[in-house]
Length: 331
Image (cartoon, rainbow, N blue to C red; front, side):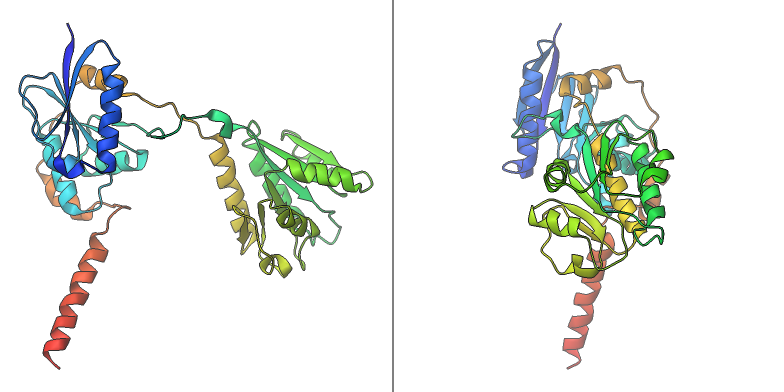
């Protein structure tokens, strides 16, 4: 027998992104022959097995049914209070990000929460961006260490953690000893006599051009920006004087540069499988009951760390406005 589902959208969400998301939810579930699905603006019709509420602030839990509440950002205390009330009504939650899931957990404790990282609403997801990122280093290194040999070794150590997704092209002399200690990375090393065509060819293959040296600047960085190639380099010499291509980053220190590179590597390895609404409903139907959160959760709300909170800035604006009124009255 088919399960009856109703998707509920508050009138405040009509014409907004939540209406698009609610319609996407409806389209997905409509294709699932196990469900009889309807979409409604306003309060839910009685007698359904499952209700999916968009805009959690106005969600009205229907007793005797599974209630799934879609949670967007929680940036104010009154929104957190609403989440606790919903949890006490045994609602299930769907968040758009793992960060919001962790935040909801901090507010309400253990609960039935699933993260549905959204798909593009307009374009089909492609895994093509998960191909290898190629970093290029085009410079010699010298015994005096002015090219930051130690930082290059640290860079190669970072890359070795992402060897399935990162490739390195090195063109220049003096890298033999460094590469002996990092043979697990995917790399090409060209230490033959400089050839302009080979140089151009390999420069063009790179996604980012790197330079770790401590001097007036690198010709490879100048060439890269001329060819509109992204660079990651130390902010020194003429690096700060030339126009950089989009996605370039000038760093204030080698440590910052390594941090930027690591973040790029992490992004290259990210991959996710979209959890469709049929799967989400299945999880809610099969989920074990979870005890209601304690009433003390309400009192803890102001003390919960919330990276999305605007409460402090809102209160500061109110205080500033109040002080201005006092100042005007005293004139």
